[in-house]
Image (tube, rainbow, N blue to C red):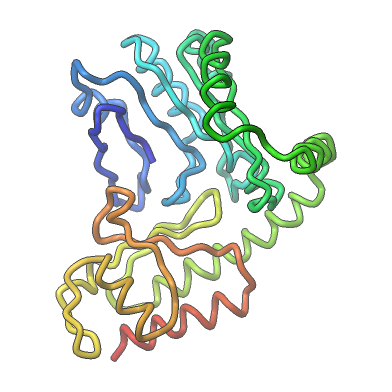
Length: 266
């Protein structure tokens, strides 16, 4: 996922060769004189794409040369699979540090979603202003949550490695089952815990009397008829796609996808 802060969304490529990665040429084509910031997420929610280190560096240098701020979300940094390697943009391009903001937290790596603990790293003057705003807007994180988060990040990553092994198995299972569905094309995710398949081959059909012309409508029909929840891609700037999470048990993945497959096969 990559966006420009003046509202321009860079179109996601869909080929197996590039997955959902964005090239510098695409950024050049999308940037305007009003562009102030680049929003960068790798590993990506929703696509599961992971930018290789050389591409992270190229995008960072692109932003540095143009004086564009970068907000990079690194919350899935420890959830990569296969040959995919996480790379932090300010580490790869130190000269961008004065115009870079890193956000992260314990929700994904440490499975502490409900604790609502995160952090931001950036230039000292910006962090000072952001802290003042945050303290008046939402007060502070509960003491017990802070203590639990410190215990998590101070410990080793052995439990995270076990969790990643399970996610790796589940992503391959979900990817396989999605690609067996008629009209569905799924790019194999490299990180995070989402598949982001294209349902464009399904659109335009009538399913159990419901005309399905968008992923939004398809999600509604799947929820009503198959009792399975998916997130339509329209909310991510990617119409025709939908996000499915494999952060659940293997049996639940098989059951949910079998219901969708049965519905789409009618």
